[in-house]
Length: 421
Image (tube, rainbow, N blue to C red; front, side, top):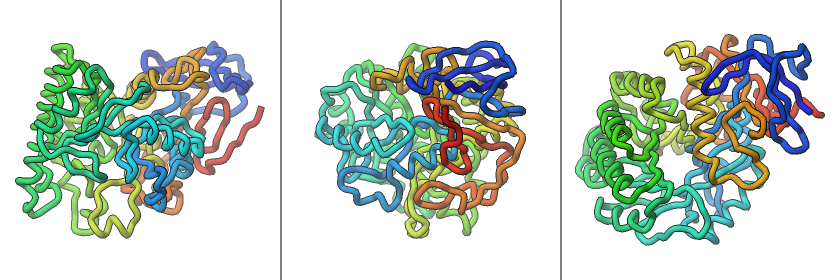
């Protein structure tokens, strides 16, 4: 039995207490008042249900052609470093998981990861739903990989086959991207109107085909109004925000960092960034999801889009607390409870009630933050195989001290198991 005592933060309350995890079952067995007995000294720290990053790119598939960037083993190491206890991996691989056989083959590769991995299946112009119940991803416009659509009509023909399914959308309108491809900068080539137009169409599809919809890595303040209106009329839609769209904006771009901070969708204006932060705080945006995209430093200098974030997930959460007044309950909601709710229906047997709450019956996976001890982000400390971070050189106000995976305690900095029953 692992027993931890301290300040506990759930999405609906924060309290002093003790949590006991059965190290045989990997589940939380009891949550109650403090008694003065704890296997770790957690003074000044906050105990959260394990954080979940529901939008990553592990780069691992049966082709093994992109594992020089990342694989499920290094995803696991970076996740532990960042306090992330479960992830959901996107399907835009060279051998994309678009049918049951390919999905199962990729799923076997996830066994190399200590953190739990949920897999999205891909939707393309010629795909059909899997036999098993899984989440899906639709890339509305060109991105990394081959799963994307060239028009709204082509996308709707495909989505019609997925009625009632859980579908996440990368919202960039392909026709507007084609019109803008000759613009001077990456940000101008992928303008905000491409996201807003795609948002309108995605919301229409979600409503028309009764999807459980999610809008990925949202970036535009004006688009948030569309999401709010859809939620108000009962459309089943949620939205993600990434650390880069919350921390950086296009006013921060310089010649020396422009390629490092290139991603799809690109950075927007300061007003967009502040609107996203407010939407995340109030609950209009539901998740901090990183779009972890581990490209090599050489690829970044060649103009490849995407940035890695798993290593800094938990430390970034302390920035939201220190700089923007997020409470521990706010962080529990957007980093633990909501991600846990998203993956719950896709979890295998033996995971109890799933992730996201410090409560008996849930997975004994925890994220423990020290919100007051700053962390300087250094390249050499990163566990991701690509070996860099967009936060390099920045000081984040707090850090992850321990990551607990189903009762096994890992020191976040070392990535090694520290406590044994």
